Image 1 (cartoon, rainbow, N blue to C red):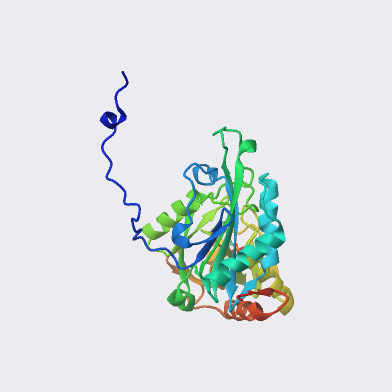
Image 2 (tube, protein in one colour):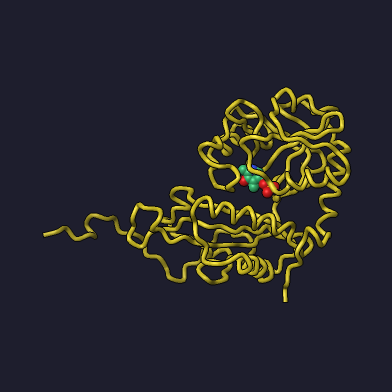
Length: 319
Ligand SMILES: *Cc1c(COP(=O)(O)O)cnc(C)c1O
């Protein structure tokens, strides 16, 4: 006779059905499985390959003063990743734009960090064949978040350059925005150990690549430079190129050594989570005079002004 299961398993404490989850969740609204939910209820199965295998793509767009910034570019990048990963979305582009709008509207945030995600999902028969998985789409809007806090934006971030190599483009196409972050997280811990606030990791040739969720630029003799290889083509990075064209500054993507960036006049990082953010120390050494430089300031100002430009923004419909 089989041993009753209660003799094998320890007795689990009973879970109160009305159990209150006391963890704090960001204030916001998510969309999943056709429904809008408070963030505390937006949960996925542990069997989802997005979780088990990082088999997913996503994009992050922000809302500032009740307007999405460059939403079309974020949707283009998201749909590009979906196609290259052979994922299928249950909704078209227009419907996804309206879901993102509704997450923001239902959250009532005027400024928000908005994420859209498509995971491989899982197979109804638990098959290991990714073609049989039912892909899942989800989205959420939470308060606007930044890589740098207010103080860091004023005085500039302190960064450490890690020896960790960013996952090479031949393994994972970096233009597909992804959650392969173990290299970036390793770099972050190394940076904290070294007393810095965030990290840059390198590419397979030892040139500077990017950091956890951001691209990097430096200014030398009035011209801008940013890594070309092994980086996610950020929309904020692209925006810096567009702003440079408008104001007549030269900006070039190429190979950037540690020595190049340390000898710069100015350094800044770029991300949807925070925009253009100054860096004033690398590996404990000051960049130039250690203060936020004039080119960085000018680009930061222009970047935020552009959030009201109808060509680059889409108003959130709250009603
Ligand atoms: C999202 C991201 C960036 C920044 O891209 P933006 O479109 O400017 O937000 C840079 N690197 C990585 C790895 C990212 O995931």
